[in-house]
Image 1 (cartoon, rainbow, N blue to C red):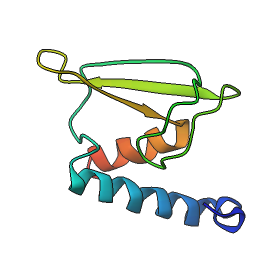
Image 2 (image 1 turned 120 degrees about the vertical axis):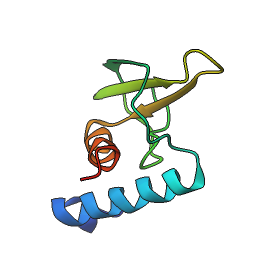
Image 3 (image 1 turned 30 degrees about the vertical axis):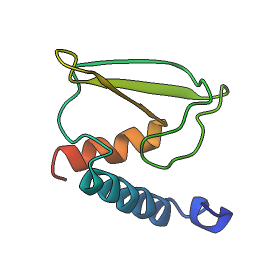
Image 4 (image 1 turned 135 degrees about the vertical axis):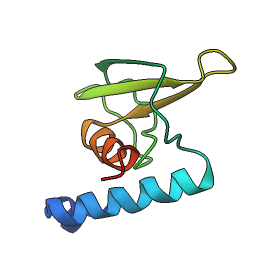
Length: 91
């Protein structure tokens, strides 16, 4: 994402929302509620919404889906998780 988008919070949220919607449609981002979730320091892993690394200087939110079958783990930045939650709730 370029600096101009990040300096405009509304435009940034719209870009993230479109990326999340694309990933949900592609089946790479679950839309159901997670079975488990936890947070910690960023590990450098890739965010499930924006595709950027989650730096150790910020929090990382980890969600587990399908814990009774083969689990799927998705990492999020804080704002990316908020965008995903709004989509999940139909907002």
